[in-house]
Image (tube, rainbow, N blue to C red; front, side, top):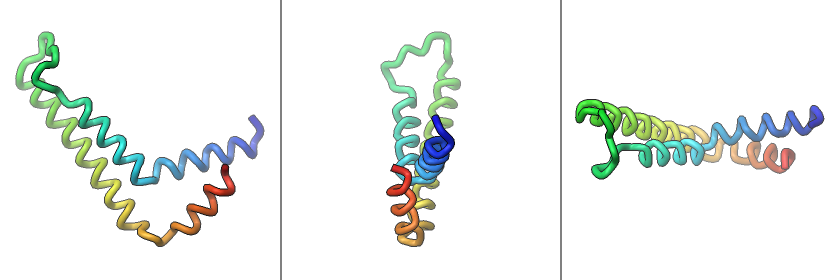
Length: 90
């Protein structure tokens, strides 16, 4: 991989990390990972299950807040710049 392709890929990754959709997808994954009533719990106690559920819910909520902040902060402010960089990188 040459330096120019590497630069483009790093830029694409950096932009993707900043997109609100990335954080919304992460929130969905945290929600998906939350314990369900029919899950096999092994030797885990109810307190451990409840703590895990609370952590995953809190992580999902943080991701959603982050996505909302990104949307609010960037609402149109950098849209043209981002489109230009994405067009150049593809």
